[in-house]
Amino acid sequence: MKTITKKELVHRIAEQTGVTKVVAKDVIQSFLNAIIDELADGNRLEFREFGVFESRERAARLAQNPRTLEKVPVPAKRIVKFKVGRLMRKKVSGEDVGNLSLDDGDEDDAPAVKPRKASGGNEAQGMA
Image (tube, rainbow, N blue to C red; front, side, top):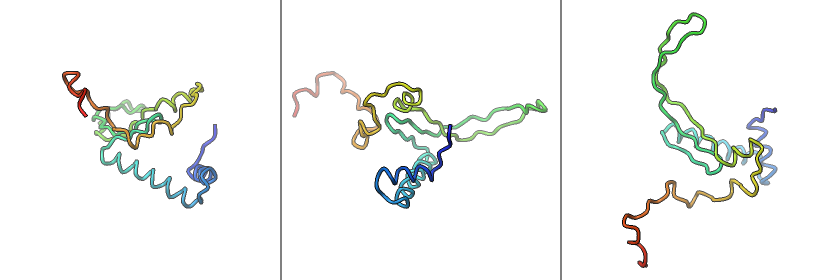
């Protein structure tokens, strides 16, 4: 296993896209800053096939110091949760992903939530 740094990713992306390392670094840093800002505002970020980031409130609790066995209060705090998407889960586990790609189903035009069907079933049919 090897640790990949942001610098290495910048280099790889600059080579793959033909942009300069400065431009690649600016784009990556802007993307990471945007994720942090959205999570700090309490928003949920969904990247289809990749995964979902969301911040959640962790309740206050009593923990135990393992050395002294003393009970220690831990205050409530906000944490970041990440739920792995289908493509990442399959690729990391070594499954065949076929033609599945992060580029498939570009969510820019898709609604974040599926629209609900109108009640009554056939009310919308035949109207133009």
